[in-house]
Length: 139
Image (tube, rainbow, N blue to C red; front, side, top):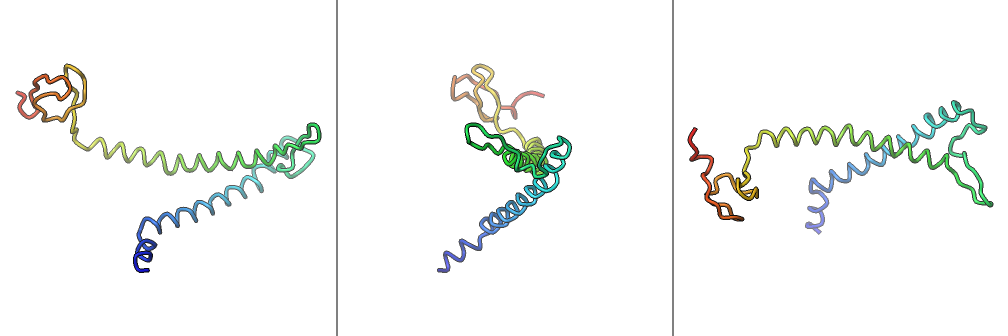
């Protein structure tokens, strides 16, 4: 039982649970924004007969296609995807690029076969050409 308790109280599990709860709440908030504000505005602009955009549909051979409801969900998805990209992915990509820029290179290209080799290598593992390590090159 103590092992299970330790598993549940590890930082990763708690952080994941918080992320799922916040994500579900955010999804509900965006769905309400789209359903209650954006799509009624679209319905008013397009002059639709029904004030509820989700009820927009057409019928073919007795089958009803609710394109308004689909558009509600599509708009919600696009808003969530944009927020995730601009608030999470773009800053993380920038941060990783900054951290990688400051890190010293650990590999270089072989001048003969262009394979990646350690910077201090004296011989290429692929083509066996002799190399002069960067630390021994004249400056």
